Image: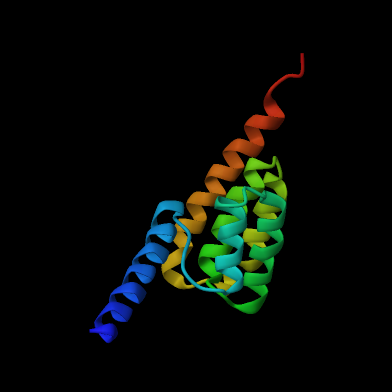
Amino acid sequence: MEGINVCKKSSKLGKKDDLYHVIHKVPYGDSPYVKAKHAQLVDKDPEAAIVLFWKAINAGDKVDSALKDMAVVMKQLDRSEEAIEAIKSFRGLCSKHSQESLDNVLLDLYKFHNWYFLVPIV
């Protein structure tokens, strides 16, 4: 009977761990990309997230997602121009199926970047 209880306890622990990742929309693991998402979504530390997204890109860890997510965080910090340059420079490392998605992120960045500079300062 003890073996059954131990299995149930570890099973509950796994479910609780899975629930945490679902609630916070953070992937599971210890990779640079996972650490970046944790910094972005749980710690709410965009500067640390950008550093970790760069580490993920350089390590080849979910490069497509890391590049897109990093660009979004950069946009939130009014660093659209830097995000545009990052996508233009590193999109070659991304898969063919992610190119359209990267184009959409670029379009959004260009719109925001151009709008930002066209707004008159009062």
